[in-house]
Length: 461
Image 1: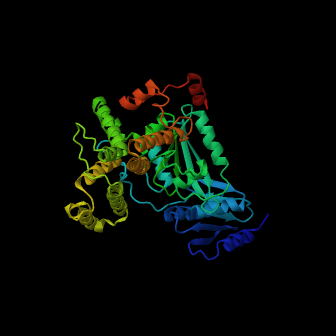
Image 2: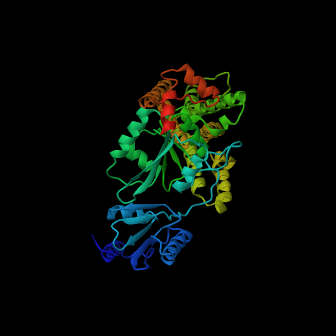
Image 3: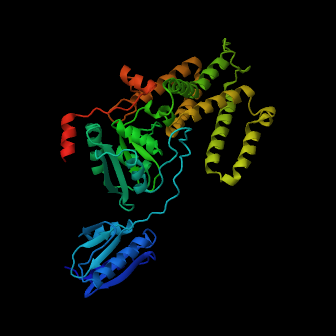
């Protein structure tokens, strides 16, 4: 067995050059020991309590007791090093083989607030933050049942990132759970910095723009899905959770549907789905009508020329400017956001129309299409729909009615070929399920049906 000095020096060599790794020697009667901790990730009050426990033990001739935090004995140096770099305190004692790992972590975190991309008028106004322990607590606060399982794993060769997947035992789909656990076990290489990195490690990188899992920053959304048998995955340092399995229509739901009356919620869902259809197909259909001078009873504004090059360039310019403004607003500091408003007025206002950059009709149609994009609850889904709209518009521009038909057909084929866990991507529309479609549109209370035998087994455990 290595002596205390040998183990301490081995840790000191591995941590050489890091100013925030602190070594403190301690003496309890004749017992020598060393505390090793990260000053940047530990709670000073807990460290003081541990030091106080040494003094009390020595003064009362008691066996050494570490309190008030949880303690784990670790025998592997590599595992102990990972725990140290995660913010836990290592206590090394002379004559004791294990590294005593004491929970003293205190991660830097921003205040809890409502997510910017999933706001609601009614309902809770809290959201996930970058602290995974805090995020677990937000879910625990909503589901107070021992069947709620929180499993933690650590992945990443250098990052050693903590990953928590949670589910309700006897309610979760066993096939989905087994598939996730198998994929997690097979992750050997690659770093995990966010939930997106983890998704690529689990399911591979693809050119398909549609998301294979749902992302959410709202703990109430995660709690609702857990009660329905889904799995939620939390990644440390990320304020967003992954929900799986998911479908196209599952990503169109938002929390306000659970805070409104049945009629209002139904009309809200229908209006939202119509807005998503408009964001996808209004601009391509209008392009075909304009190119063929097909006057309809809708009195849709049409263009008086047939030059597809200039017509298409104007549409692409407007759509590109709107996309530039969207991205710039995301990255612009709050103090400069008012300047972006003036720039947007100049880029999309009467001045640009008067110099012939594009026509009023093009501006109106692109604006309506982008309103439908912003109406889509899932941020990743809205971006995928937007790029599919651009593809269908280009086909409609150069192919007319035939190009529009090919674009819509390719879009449907892409959605049908999108692979997710357990369910087809367009379920419950394709294949059609009246029961699930009714639940999607009408909602309703969440009622769990447990197996009596399994519930009894869980109770006795």
